[in-house]
Length: 161
Image (cartoon, rainbow, N blue to C red; front, side, top):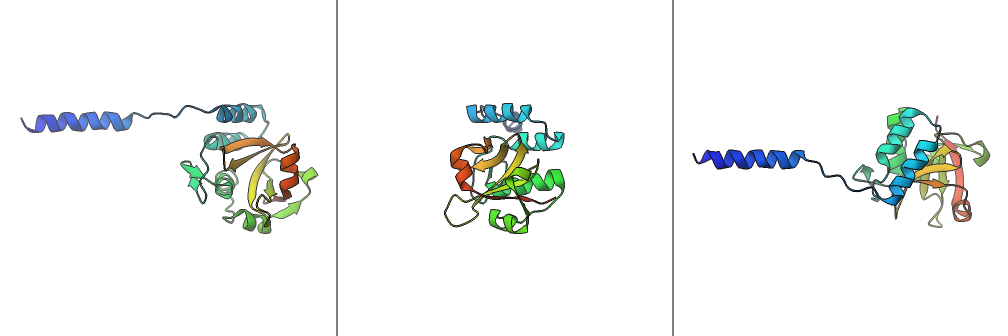
């Protein structure tokens, strides 16, 4: 009879661990989903980006628990295009075929200098002047390229496919 409480405890523990509590979506995450739904991009790219939206920023991270800009781009490229990229934004920039901003297409990369020391950030272009990236303050978001601050920080663009 002593094992009966142990069995009940085990079943209760199993039930509790099988319940998944979802974090509420932030306004930024909801805006990102809305922006993503409006874009005419590959279905697999849209699905992959949707699964990353709202992921918190983590320097050196490359999982949905936390990711940095190059970790995000590497993960998306591997999943959608089956291309393994170098791990850092600087190395991705060096490996890419540099293109003009006016020639950007879906899946191209945009490189930024936010530190004053060269390439320090990367995002993936989605079209319609939008790109997905891992923001240090907001996590994975979709942002506009057409703003004065962002324009001043762009180092260049590149193509990997």
